[in-house]
Image 1 (cartoon, one colour):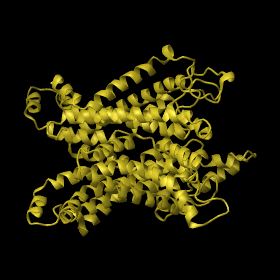
Image 2 (cartoon, chains in turn cyan, blue):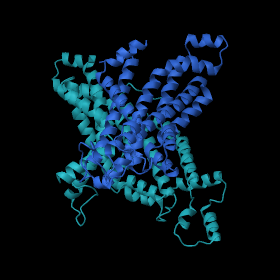
Image 3 (cartoon, chains in turn blue, brown):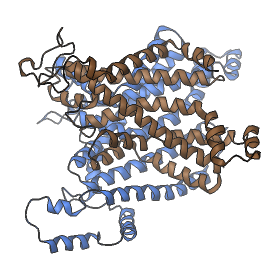
Image 4 (cartoon, one colour):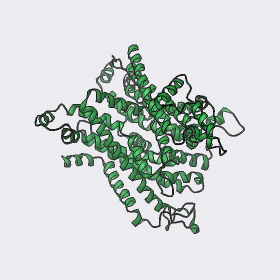
Length: 317
Length: 278
């Protein structure tokens, strides 16, 4: 296992190199270029100043040279400076990271709990009304536009019923924990919805096939209690494929966060990204994209490793 | 074969209903200029912000434009982008997957590493950057969405080609002097058509969803051309007082994507005799 992880980590190097080249090429193609921010202030700027700025940033060099320089600084954790705030990109991302992690973490937890409950109920009584309801809801959940669900929940629970705040992280002027949690509920539900839909289906399918397997029949024949058969034998084995699907889903949360944070004005990475997009702040956009890609690769590895740990039959060489 | 396929598909009642629904909505949207009750940019300041009524089935918006009309015209753009982007993505994925699987060796390795890179970059943020570069129009939306949704098809086609190319009939064709291109186009790709079609179907739903997300962020097809996504974006500010403006476009996206997914699922089951079809 150790050598497998080491080899996978090594494989990440060329993968990240490829991704960074794509990301760098996108910066190069960006309309305006870095001096655009200097010129957009509206004041007259001497052409020689612009030229000096270009030399200072190194954009007068050929593209391969620029890439190597950029990669070298990126490796040391420096993703450049924001055009709009002139602050280091990495610092801006670090500031927004806790809010996003909090939202993602609660959405993930919520989705896992709900998916487990729905999947279990459906698998124990296949084709019952609760199973049909779960199947129907999961089809709807997958086809539901995330932002529309967000708008509907805001309309019903925030505007009409007044049970939860519309958006933001806390009521202006207060900083209590209950107030903050109330703000977290709706965005977490929205972000979790799609995952509940897909994970509960996976769990249902794999639990049904586990319940029909020989080892469950053997366990029952040994006279074990049904609860013990279910949770110790069936559920444990049924979770193996689900856990790796969940790890892959985590990688996808980045995309979901962009929309959810926009709808609920949640001050995380996704919102930073959308704001940077409207400001045409390319270094910030690229920084977030690079971090997002790294997250995807890492969670792919986690998915494979967890799969191997849970199922001893799987041997990585 | 085709009759068998249809019988298997028809076992999914939801998929048959979906097909009929998609056909009706698709036809209504395609014929929008002929059947829409009002012009899509017809501003009527005497009847702004009306809730649904007999003369305006889905109400009117802030400028007095008929929402039903805009839904039909918006559906034209949304569905067209969905279909075309799925075609672009499927063609590209099939070409790359077939080339990788057929040639093997270094070409396979290189193409699959490119696929890995494309897979690892989060799609929505990348789409947002690309559409921020281009002046969002129908063609660029189709290309951007299509060019970023080929990876799954490429992997599936590659694995199919890997097994099909070992078949005797491929060997027979080669011994008769058929060129690589002919073998691929006439013998290999047609036999991998099942999974390609399933991928393409699900791709339509995905592309409609992506387009509406981008339009919702203000990056998709620009007003005054309506799409379901930009109608939702417009409705956001006045959601509390005029909920029908939010309700209908979202419902349309949900139902169309739902219908497409049902069809994709039924197609998958119909093409896979080994699966435990319900």
